[in-house]
Image (cartoon, rainbow, N blue to C red; front, side, top):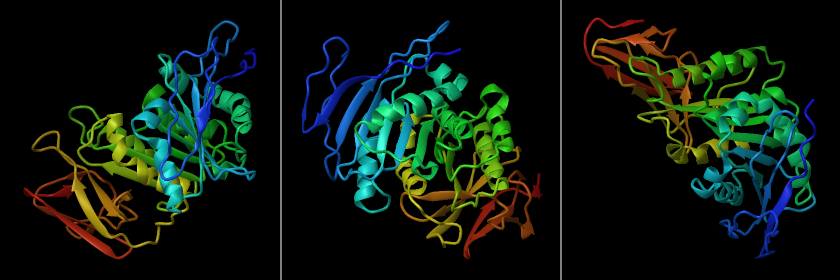
Length: 365
């Protein structure tokens, strides 16, 4: 039986001026940061849990507390690979900016850092990590800021294995986490068992954002496997009763490979949708476009995305059945097309798009 995780060590509390770090626990300094457009408090922790038989090390955590924090419990976002999200993708600043624009409510951001045991934590043992977050980290965060216990006000963010963990957390603790941002999630892991678990899940998330790059696959694939898995996950969410555009969205990113740095451009849109309350299922987009993926060979079938742009930051890739996708005027029941000289058309909330592909003898595959 796993023993409870030992007490998390407080390393640094920044409130205008910082206390010196504890001499016997600090391994590095953490510079105070000013979050645009207003200041926020930053708390850094390190965890050192020890289990019988084997060790499960939970990385250090950093907590960004909105300056507007009062006694009211605030919604909370947990981010995996948090050091990268904070330092490179400026997650806390983005959340603060969106709150200042009234696009979202003020959210507490809790970043969980990465370690050399990232695969074990995020892919092999996410349920253990989820329990540790709820039972150990939550109470420590609550010592510094009141955080909500409502699932609709508790979100998860991750990329790759982190995206996989975000989905697994929501499945393992459906009463504790209701909003999920899964960026390029590694749903292929463990024989795609996460997709099977989602299919059997008794409770779907409140909001689910999924994205993947059009080059996240293997050579010769018409539909890159990361895209295929993302489409499957969104389809399962819809089968669970989630409405596309309001409860669940998909973003298929053209000409994008598996690279966390490339997630920066789509992070603001992911936050706006997942942490806010946008309802885009009946909202006419500014424009609709059809993006044809690169073919693995000149005579290979192809796939495409139907992209609806609602703002510079928010672009959704709509399922073909909801977008009335047609090939030479005939309804399509698959996003795979054996192409030639043909016209693909789509319509979202009355906004039309057409794309002509070259060759001859087109037919749905």
